[in-house]
Image (cartoon, rainbow, N blue to C red):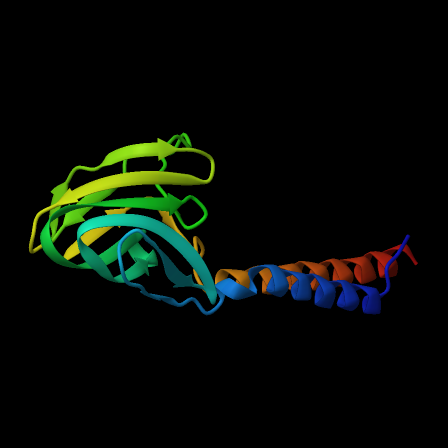
Length: 183
């Protein structure tokens, strides 16, 4: 069964539309967030979507939370008034830390630029819960993982769409040459 040139064009447009629908949100990423008090949910904005980050905090409050995709780090700006603790649920669809064998590995935690430890309280297929102790005067906690949304750069969806169209166009031309050879 031979496909005509118009059918290839239709398939190219259809596949491009599907890809843009599926991956369109990652074309123009935004990685800013605003939030407030402890024992709360913080809405982290990524790719025009809001992701709830549940946390409980003693000894201060979260001022701002930002996802840094270039180094897979979640940066949390704090205002502290005492020694305290931040317990944070990190949804795996937002951020994760895995080794090459796809097994969980510890997040690397920094408090004002110095590496500190954290306890992983719970883990399941959806979230990993961290407990981080901090001193009064702490201004920033960074949580570094191996993946943060969006995982792929902003041009990857466009490049994939262009590649699919290119393959379809090449296949169409190849079919025409085969048709000439057989006649």
